[in-house]
Length: 361
Image (tube, rainbow, N blue to C red; front, side, top):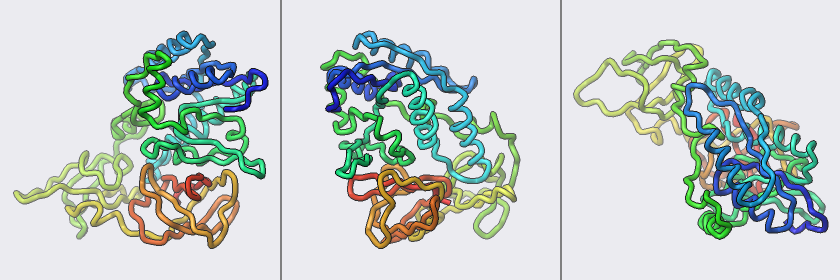
């Protein structure tokens, strides 16, 4: 944030939370011409309506900082690129990653493009990640300083276009310090709880959410031997490892919890086991194919050792990358890993630099 020769315009995505609030305050303190932008997204009429309260919090932050406030209506983009994508993936038996798609299509496409068209030199968000310029002039994305809050995993789809015009003001700050800064700036969000769950929407019951868009399709629950022991309301409503939501009709006095270990979407069947997930469906895997790949600053070199994770906050594991085409790659891990799920993101790192990643096929 050193560039300061003339007042550069920065549009900050204000969610109504502490991270984006402090981001706006830091940018203003650094001398930028800051505008706060609340992104209004599509919300289902059957979910709690909380966007008005969040927008009011964002407005109060702008009033406190003495900066302009705008609202971008991106409901259509969010519904199409995040909600419809989620429904489509679950119906296909895959596990989607809506936070990645929200960043890709809503925050760093729709919001980014509109802000730039309106005259913004840069956009900024409260993500815990960092942007650095290399000696060659390229921009790379680094993990956030706070390892517990690092969000680079959800930002692997960003390109040079976005990174060259994006600030992550709290990316090099630990979360407790962010809250202290909020108090110092006298921001009412200093003690506000962090949002959880889906990007913008929050915590939702998956089956309740999907049932409004996908008709129930009753089917059988089988044990590992193929015996029918229960029923369910549609295989696409369930995730591997889940132990609730289906009905076991063949019960004994000694039953222990059943876990979903396999789904057959075409046959509409769930297979369950009394074994704990880590001893069953989480099979050890070393070779993972990814598609729809994006390499942020450089294409991984063949034979070089990198690290990767297949889910948020999973410990990084050593691996090599073999580029198969412009949009596909094979990732080979040094040791077997668990919980590799089709549809999720595999994200690659070179030390603290996020190189990019792809969707597990």
